[in-house]
Structure formats: structure tokens, C-alpha cells
Length: 194
Image (cartoon, rainbow, N blue to C red; front, side, top):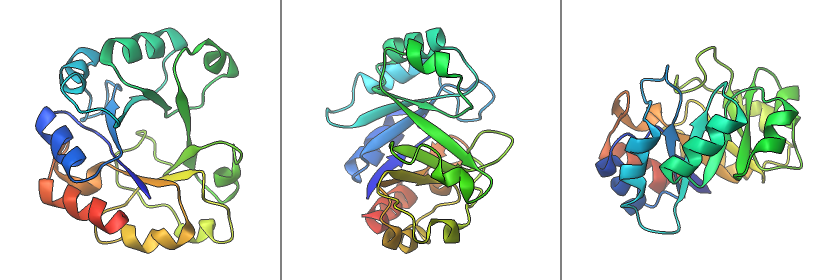
């Protein structure tokens, strides 16, 4: 399984995650999040990172112009759209993107089933709450294009392997405090996921 460590706010946390085997890092460009980072501060981190690691910019309730400009300014390589995006926004994006499904029920996880997508537990505050999805929903579903998020940590990530997810995404499950990663938790999470 591919692993994304989200909510990166420092170079130390970024390089620790990469050294532990992370495939992708997430940078939260959502002002209301305790893990918020400005595109400029993200660029300071990203410009020092080694190649072949996906740098994901997370967006909530913004237009295509902001997404395009923040992506260019920060050096992120993939936009993660954590909101109900009007079709017109997708058409105006100049950057690769991934849709996020904030799932409330089984039907929700079937949306965009022909695309790679991230499935997270629905919560009012747009992620980072560590809220778990009902894993039973994924039984007998092709999960090969799903990145699972929500409520994952080192103690439970190995148990989702059997569903065949493309990847997993974690933020609060590997933190010391909001926005500060715990190096050992990151290591253990990636080890258990892979």
C-alpha cells in the first residue's frame, strides 16, 4: 500500500516521513485547520525534498484560480480537493488532482469508482479529526483505486490491508500534537502499512 503522511508543517517532519518510507506528503492549504501552512512555507520545505515523493496540496472551498496559484507557488505536485467541487472548477485546473469523498454511508464510497479517489469519514471540519469509517462498507468492493483516510494509526493500519486499498492517508494518527508529527509513530505506521 502507498502511504501519505498529511498535515506536514516542518522540514524535519517531512524528511522523517520520507526516510521512513512515505510515498506522499500532504500540505494543508485550509486556513481553519490547525495544520495550515502557507504556500510559501510549504515551498521552503518542498524545495529541499528529494525527488520521487508526491507533494499533495489539500484544498477546501476555494476556486480553481487559488488552487492553480497555490500549487505553482508551493511546488506541490497533486491537488487534493476536500470539498464538493463544481464541474467548472475541474475544467479550469492546470494541475493533477484527486477527488475526496467524505463518506456518510456505503453509497458514498461508490462515487467516482472508475477514478483514483480518497475516501475519508464525513465530519463538519474537513478532516484531521481521526474519525473512523465503517470498514465493513468496503467488503466485496474493488478498493484498488481507493486511498483510505480517517481514524488510522499504527495499531490498526495493518488490519485494512486485506481490502486491497491503493493507499492510506494519516494525519492525526501519527502526531504528538496538532501539526507536529511523532517520528516513532510515523515509522511504525509506515512499517505496518507496507
